[in-house]
Image 1 (cartoon, protein in one colour):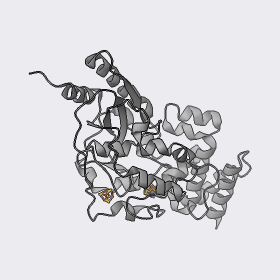
Image 2 (image 1 turned 180 degrees about the vertical axis):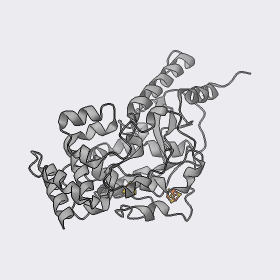
Image 3 (image 1 turned 60 degrees about the horizontal axis):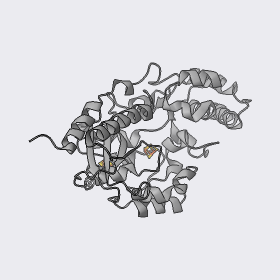
Image 4 (image 1 turned 135 degrees about the vertical axis):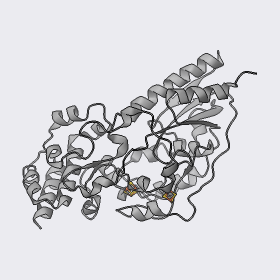
Length: 346
Ligand code: SF4
Ligand code: SF4
């Protein structure tokens, strides 16, 4: 007897470079509505207003496309080869989150998902419909991944799998096909609280709850304007994202290796020199981060982050770099520059 459509689909997904592929129903989303509603009602989403605007979909993915009968959930590992926290002591250099040091995963994952969706239509035949989502539509991918058995949402709120670890990108393909589903995964954090204890800004009010307004990933990537002065010293030299809570998770020692070479750090993106980054103008920034997710935040927000890192560096020689930006046309950059100068002098 030949392989079932589901078995062939999984083999095709692994061939595409995904690390795992499992299936759930769109209405099989555990717990999310309550957790999301609390997160939003307490304002923990900060300036990410789209989360509130699309909450009804996130809470119930069956509403996104009522005809869908199955969700194919895919995980792709980007497990780093070196310790991402090692650079935190190199104070005149910036630390960029692992996922952003290489090529933009949105582009790569989306291409793979689309190819897989086309393959599925060709295999399943006439009448099969599919829709592809990757981190851009309001799909609660972590909850769907848990429903499909890929892992669970750890105390750090990210998806974590026994064989995947937590360095994973998620994507999903919704389809009208009625595919056999996989068993959901339970939670296996146990008494561990390493991720909660390592967080430099105390961004976890409780296990499984994140206050994004204190999280360095949010502050460096999503937050517009000046960052609360009380939080700036805690950001250290993290200039784009933060990986601390992911890096300390003990489940990573079982994690599958990343297959995609393009996720490896691009030349110059591993511990770049802060002084050189502070000099970037708009055109220089766009050129430097072409094809990288960093490009999306724009020069002003990026240089703001670099100046906070300069302020935290303890390197008096960098004060002049900051001083030169005190009259920057962007008021947030100018404010960050003045803060850095004062901190280095004080
Ligand atoms: S990403 Fe960093 S700042 Fe955000 S919760 Fe994790 S450890 Fe804390
Ligand atoms: S570090 Fe520990 S508590 Fe945090 S997600 Fe990993 S296993 Fe769970």
